Length: 258
Length: 233
Image 1 (tube, each protein chain N blue to C red):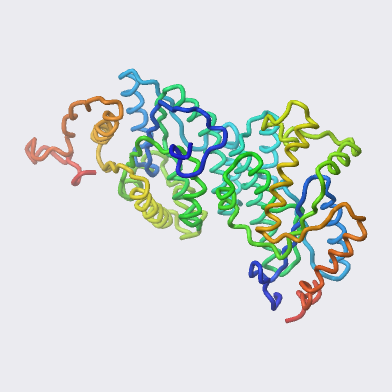
Image 2: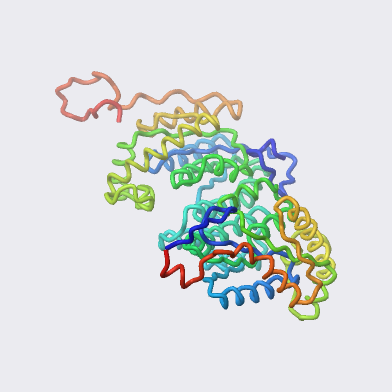
């Protein structure tokens, strides 16, 4: 069964056929991932497809260990990368594969790519990370929600009131300043996502826009998987509409798009 | 100051000695005796065992008890555990110029994971952060001998030790023999590819220990004792 994975066979994977579809939504914190996952799940279910959603750090086996380890901030880079791989493998084997075998669509809120990017940003080689996750199933579709760091920053602050320690890569000691570290870290991650986008054939979606616009792009990518037509385009968003109202009607227009 | 002669195997100033073999092969006894002798000679010695990091010990225990582990998660969980131990307890003394004695090392994983059907190249990649030891002593012994020792000690054979998760046999002793035979075949294969120092473990304890000490003499020539590490150079 190595043709369904990235090169390494998964021992015990016997399901001759996995008729379900595996759709992955990747993107940084603040790229609108969770919003899109919710919208996409609704849309697919309304269309009659059974959807199982999954994400990182949700396995029964080690998610508690990961949370604990993060509180301690004492794990080495190899250890952290491997611990995340246990979590992923556990979910792959106990949740994703059975759901696909049952013909469900699995909607993954992040997948191995985020884990690889994080490991590489912390010093692992691309080759090591690529081989480590060789046992992962190849998705039917990987959508990368691509948003500029400054957008991520504002969404993150808007949502949490601050920046997250780990999402800012503070453990890398790139800078003692949270704000500066955030940009340096996101820059590293986006370099890795650029490389992986080519290597793994991501479909990029411009996530600097409003959720409805993003969602429509995603729908257009997903519909063909089921041999369906994409829905009609949503009405253009107010902010993006050029000169629809007199410029005098006060500053509701946002600067450019997003 | 730190030792002047870095190891030819891994480039660190310390020395890395590894003891491998089946359960009941006598390797732990020999490792402990050797460690004692090295200390008596004035060397700084650090000792580590397999599967002892606080991080994953409880998960491994729980996973085993509940039968949650598959060959892949079993392998990755042990790799995590080893990485933690390596980064915390093996690498620092190795860099500081000490002798690190490991009762089992990555080879234990190569052997067990291969017996469980994991892709050997994949497992090796996962452990590629672990440097080549200066010596790997492989305590070679027939499976029938280890089983006899096991039964005589009245320690219960545990589920994973017997490879019961592989469904080789419903009988615990039978499964144990078959699984240990698989492990031995893998060890024998690695003995060649990874240049193990093979030790016939059926001989008397004293005789084996004498051979080990003799084998290490050239490796320890000019190697600094604890005293010299602190005050010389």
